[in-house]
Image (cartoon, rainbow, N blue to C red; front, side, top):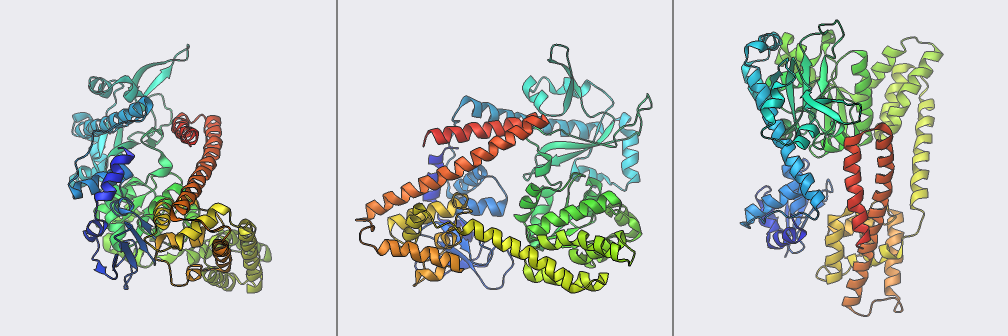
Length: 598
C-alpha cells in the first residue's frame, strides 16, 4: 500500500469522528476534544484529540499518534491493516497493491502462501483427529478433560503416522518454495548439498495451532503419544515448528488472539507456561490467559504484552525449571515497570491439573491470593537458603539484589529492600547501601549520557515547536515528531521535544520542561532564537530549516539501525539461523536503499 494512499486517507479522515467511534469525546476548545483514555484506566479524562493537526495524546499514559496509530494500538493490527480500516470507515476504495521491487512482491506472495498452507494444514490435522488411527489421541485428550468444544475452539488436531500423506494432499495447491519454507516438512540433505524429497515433520502427534494476533495459524506445537520409537529411542514429548518468515518463537504469545480483549477489559494478563495449562484455564472461564509455550520469556514478548496491559499474574509450573523461568520472567517484567504478582498452587500442581482436580472456583481463589512478586522472591530466597547462618544470608542477599536493582521506581525498591531485610534477619542498612549505590550508578549513567549540549538540529526543532499552532513550521515539526518518536529517542532534548510535539504550547514555553536539564536546553534554544543574527528571515526559511533538521534526525536513526542490523546479521550467521538471517538481510537492503536515496 503506497505512502500516497496513506496520506490521502489521513487527509480525508476525520480523526475526531474515527476516535469518537471508540471513545466518548467532548469539545474543550476550538480544535481540541477530550475523553477517558482507552489505553489505561482513569476517572478524569486526560485523553486529548486535536482535529486540526490530526493527532491524539494522553497526558496520563503518554500514548500518542495519528489516526492510524490509534487504530493500530486499539485494534492491535498492523499499519497496512489500520489504513484499510480507516479507509473503510471513510468510504475510500482500496487501490490495487503495488510493490517497490520484485523481491518485495515475491516475499509478500510467499507470506500469503504460508498463511494459506498453515490454514490447510490446520484443517488437515482437524480432519485426521476424527480418523480411526487417531483413537489413542482422542482417548488421551478425553483423559485430560479436553471436551469436543475445546477441540473445536482451539482447532486441536492429529498428525498421522505417515511421511507422505499431507505432502501429497497439499502439493497440488502450493508451490515447492512455500512447502519448504513452511516448516511443516523436513527433507534429508543429499551428498551434493541439495535437499531431497519432503516428508511430514509432525507424525503420530496431537497438534496445537499457534496463531498470530489476527487468529491466523502460523506454526504448531505437537505432542507425542509415545515416549519411544519402535527402535527404543527416546522421543521428544513436544515438537515445535521451526522459525519461518511467519513465525519467530520469541515474538509470539499463545492465545493472544483470543485473550487480548479480556486483557484490556480486566487490565491484567495471566501468564502460564504450557498450552494445555492455557487451554484448560481459558475453557474454565479465565479468558485473559497467555502461554509462553514452554520457551523462555523474551523482551519482544514483554513489549508485545505492554500494548494491552502493564499488570501480570505469573503462574508457572512449581518444579525447578518453572521456578527459574518465573524468576527470569519477573526480572524482564519489573524492568519494564510492570506490576507483577505470582501464584504458587497448593500441592505443587500445574494450572491444568489444578483446574481439573480442584475446580475453577479454587483456581480463582488462588488468583485472588497471588503474592506480590517481591514477597514471592523473598520466600524463594528463604527456600533456597534456609539456614540462618551468615553465609546463607549473604547468598539470599545476592539472590535478591539483582531483582531489587531492576525496579525502576525508588519507593518500590526501598519497600522491597525493607521487607527482605526484615524477613531474612539482615541489617537493613546493608540493603540501603546497596540500593543507594545502584541508584547512584544509574544516575551517573544518565548524566554522562545527557551531558552533551543539544545539537543545532534539536534547537531548530525546539524553536519551531513553540511557534503558534497554525505556523507551518510548527505543524510540520509537531506532525513528524509525534509520528516518529524513534527519530529523537536518546537525544538530550528528547523529553521536552516529546512534550511540545504532542500537546499545546503552554503560555510560558519553559513550563513544558519537566526537569532542570530540559529547562536549560529549551532556554538556550529560545535564546538563540531571540538573537537577530540567527533568527530566520521569514516563515518559509524556518520551514526549510525544520525540513533539514527532520531529515538529519531520520538519517541518524537509519544509520543507527543499520549498525544494529549488521551486528545482528553477523550473530545470526554465526548461529546458522537462516530464517532470521533472511529477514535481517531484507531489512538491511531496505535501509541501504533508503540511505542512498537521501
